Image (tube, rainbow, N blue to C red; front, side, top):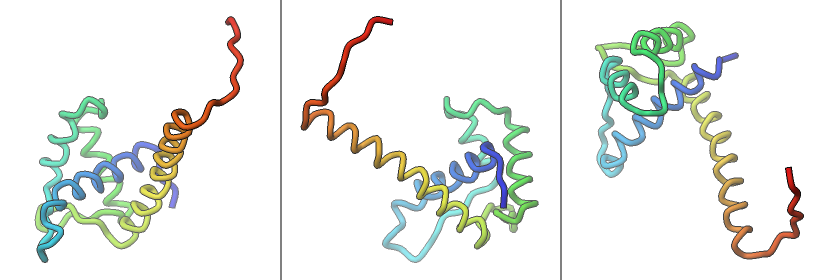
Length: 119
């Protein structure tokens, strides 16, 4: 299924939001869910997301129409397909983070030959 960069971003943000909400409950047999408005309000307060609340709502509707999330009982839940795609996004993001850590570690442990060039 083809998703736009924005749709992938919103799906990832929702996954991270749920991960943070459920982190303290890992040892318990319960999971926290949220409503669209609570998620949109929380996300709109971040300095990373610059979209208007209406645009975020429309993106969530698109994800719902693509059957990646469902909205039942006024709570957002991931569908099995949505969870698969979220897992793929997480793996992709982790590759970038691991690469960043690799370069961070290598820089301090070993000298790298470089040339300084005026621009």
